[in-house]
Figure 1 (cartoon, one colour):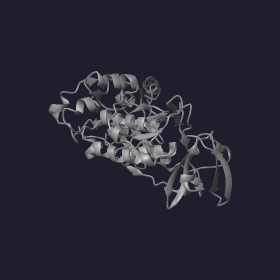
Figure 2 (spheres, one colour):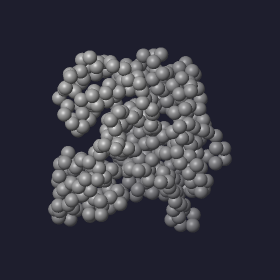
Figure 3 (cartoon, one colour):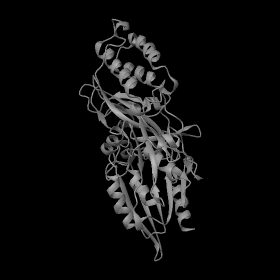
Length: 418
């Protein structure tokens, strides 16, 4: 989950040690980044990293920075010392002086030693020029990145083995998010065989009311396929959907941030019963603002519970479709659901990127995404950045991409109907 926060006041920590040749805009931005991480990173122990020493080492390297690209690279190298996801530094999309960097509107995975297009935005310039899933990208990945809206020359080998050179406009993938975030349809194979298909592109503020409507329409189906492929997360609105899918109300997860964890000096691997009893119970918080407000007003910690939907609780089978891009809040939903009676997870391992992040504005037109809270599951164990393996593994191959063969979907329908 993410939300914009106001700027924090920056002290002159470390300024005396900065080389005189460092431009002020880089030195100021560096201090904002270091201090934001120092004050707001969820784990007071910084996952075992000495953040003060890390800042000192990278502050010395500022003298070798000559342009925005080198500065962003330096900051991301410093952030990379913390072993966590959801931590990166970039040009803000709202910047008036710099252009954000991006690629070509495709997802590219390394499969059998080749860079394969596994998904492409249907309205992207790459799609318009004939790039398809299954195509091999012969141009090195590093050459794809560049200013948003700029052209890049690429070479691809299509599924028919033809090699083509193309000029493609760089643009982001999956942004802005598709609306509505949750879509569904009923599938009737016969008069007495009906199942539901529900696709969630991102867990956003519109999900909870849409989930209510979808579950009402799919109440009498044999089963539901919930497609979470390429869902990179969002907020905890999935808890409303979970309320229909679990047999009884209960704790879905716990969010803890720095103010709460400071009393322990670290982020524990497991929350015991005594600690769980201290964490306030929250229900009905399904928007980013409501979720963040809930744990902030409770001293930086809150336990989020599913609600009692009574006779509307779903009784049929549930299949979750996942892939390597299923991340963050979507992964937490999979983690919560896997292993429950009647639930089957199909696809590939999820991304392994489960922490809660917020965006911080940095002077000079930059943006810092920072993990400010971590998640513990209903079993009390920390979720942080752990992949979830499917019950039925569907390997990602170029062959099925080229044949447009949705093997995972076939397997899901088979689970529901057999």
